[in-house]
Image 1: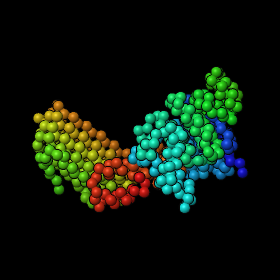
Image 2: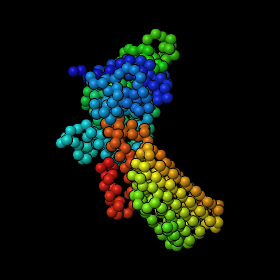
Image 3: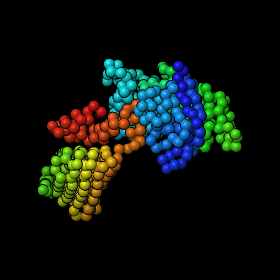
Image 4: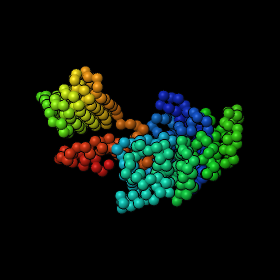
Length: 250
Length: 189
């Protein structure tokens, strides 16, 4: 069976009742890369949060399915164990929780008894991946995102992605706040993942698309996808902005 | 009963305390009464069930160049209740003294209640003093973040609690009680 993430007529609102997603339809087949672009306040981050099951939003209509399974009402950890990953725009600092121990726990959550990674085996794996991302070795000693610089936090998200090996990933602005070198490392790591991945990349800027080649680009405006196309659409947007799309029919 | 302590030594007087629900009243009245006297008081609070306590800690700086550090950290589960009052008084003439008072209570249940009130009474100008208190539930954003990596909610909460305590526990000397706590949280840190 082909692996698919299907978003079907999805409506979602905040707990206070503010409607943010107003009928999203999107199907991502593995190993496609889809990019969602759009102006601030259009619903990009909300889409990412709702896909992962953030308790601060309520789905009022529609459904989300992952590899044929309806995940609309599942808790975030169950979605993750079914193969979904969210790379956070603002990774959360968790004081006192060791990055490496936590990640080993997360990786082992999905593994069967007898197949769990030992601390040493995991440490080697982590150091190997960290090297690819040019993340310093002391990451194994550090606490989860605590005291990480903006760039380190973003790299650590991609490092988690590389270790958890999901079937689908939503990356919420993995490029924001990065210098060119960090951006290149992140793009390079995404391009060289050693497992098949369906990717939904949310971005505000065209910049990261100089290093990644998406199969499809979608424009999210006011809670709806108003335009979809190939990679060239991102270029057009760079030249013309979002403004004129507000008056176009989807 | 109020524990009265008068500190007259210049090397740091270290007072590590662990409360796990037995007493209902913890009262310390501590005076730093020699030039250069210093105290570090750590209080670890672990409340669950119906346990409760009133905690009053008073530090008086009576001499110059005295130093006090009071750090309280606690986890309250079930319907445990803690009422913490910390008072640091710096008397006139206790110049070049240094005081720090911090209390952080983490509520691990909707029924748990915590109150932390720091007070500073400063009668001398040339000193340094500060306080920090927080009382709050486990951060929802932290729970969501950990869960998004496949960790179930209960484990995610345990991790956050263990992380909240781990660094603080390192400062405690080894004891039966500490080992017990470490054992409880070991699998998560």
